[in-house]
Amino acid sequence: MTPNTPTRTAVDPAAGSLPDQHGHRNADAPSSKVVLITGASSGIGEAAAHRLAADGHRVFLGARRTGRLAELTGRLTADDRTAAYRRLDVTDAADVRSFVDAARAAYGRVDVLVNNAGVMPLSPLEALRTEEWNRMLDVNVRGVLHGIAAALPVMRAQGGGHFVNIASVGAYEVSPTAAVYCATKFAVRALSEGLRQESGGDIRVTVVSPGVTESELADGIGDPLARQAMRAYRSVALPAGAVADAIAFAVAQPADVDVNELVVRPSASAQ
Image 1 (cartoon, rainbow, N blue to C red):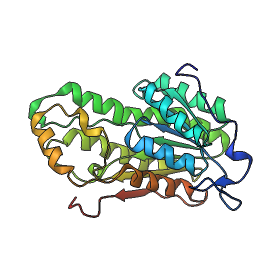
Image 2: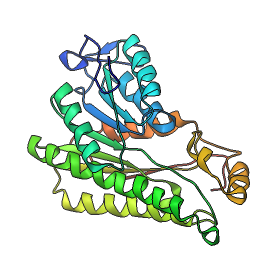
Image 3: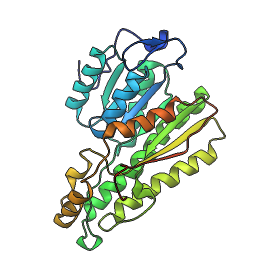
Image 4: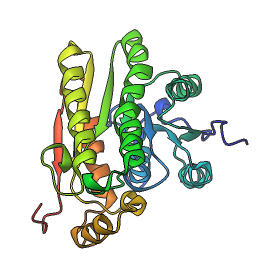
């Protein structure tokens, strides 16, 4: 198998009832959905892949680190889940279209797109790390727009769909060293609300805004001041699985229920 070739189990959950977290099937469970996840190689994306696949959904995973995607897909399929992957760079609009097309070719439709890919190289504005600013804009904002542009026509044509856009508590407040990052997450929230208002009810839109979460997101902070501040800030963090549970909650709602915003914070945090 080449990294760009989807792989999946021989058992398709859509053919019958869905397994619960222990692998047991429930005749009353909702139908399996095709769920695409960007930034699926670690953190929230990886946890969401595990949770949604365990819920019986067919997951299609995208990220740049294909080695990790291959390992994750292997673990899921070994547990009799249905999963496939493709290399994905969300900053490339054509690549995102190809990702969506590959998912539809593999599974026949696109029910949910989890726009999860993100970067967070924090720094004070006066540090003038403009390349990092542009990287955040490209991944955190344009990446979401590219996902919408690729998946929205498909969802319209099939009569429905669901966008789950991962923002942050930084979509509601701004903190020192995080001005640009927060600006991108404010943008994700604004784009999501605009899409919700324009959807006419056929397309559901959910914004999930985590507080500090266990992930590799802070590993890319190059500014010493911001890195030190984040080390203290992350002393209390959510497990990524808690955010995956919030995503799964929104996805599991019936078609006439649209969960618009979920803010998930560590209970012991002062955020």
